[in-house]
Image (tube, rainbow, N blue to C red; front, top):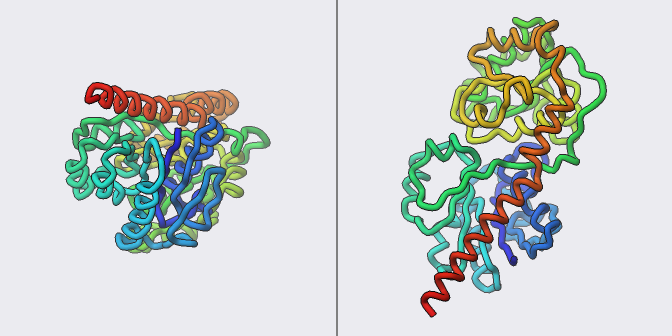
Length: 349
């Protein structure tokens, strides 16, 4: 297949630190190329890819802007129209608006976000697009889309490993936002009597929350703050942590950090919101709890984590959340789309 992948113009592929969408795009592109497909990636010029790379911006354009996205997507779609692609897989919502200009090329679009009314209203205009939800919970909460498959994210297991000594600390890795619950992670660790290492930073919309709930907590003696971290620091931290804490209070559509932890053999202790119920298997890849008190009980020294099987956790994660599984699922969807299109063309002929 000749496949066009349209990423965002906001971060490089793969991202240097923060950037879940762009990391998934990277894994998908690399997997498709490894399977022998002809892939062109439309991203930013500072991206690194085994596919042919094309770009409108030589560098990532942060913070996000609708005008930036419009220029990036329009440039990408113009080149796709002039090419000979079998299928377009977009990861930027703006691309849907251009899909009607290329009626002969099927478009796939991945929902990377929680439900947003403006986007849901936008999607209603494009019933012919093939949507991919990243969890069953995300699909359940979204408007009814006529063509929507669920494909869980996957990562290359070779970038992660399980082994080495486990320390006495737990960790939190993610955006310092109220819905992610970093203040509750700090509280749970304090109640359990264990240190916690915090990887992340607040984004501009989260500054008031960070000032109110995190400023004093981050100075507590059991807390170590790392700032934003990339894979080079993230993997050793997950390998050495007793658990990753995820006291989320929102309907998180997926949570890449969950499967990154599992691939390192690190159990995820999370609140049962969003995708966590379908990603985490109690006692195998982590634990679902309903309060900071229950979280503290799980991570307390002498508790269930002492007998947690980290190798089994990783093995299970490789099977469910490895890149090959994700790529195979996408190729199945692509093949069905092209088969249906060819059948319709034969009927018309």
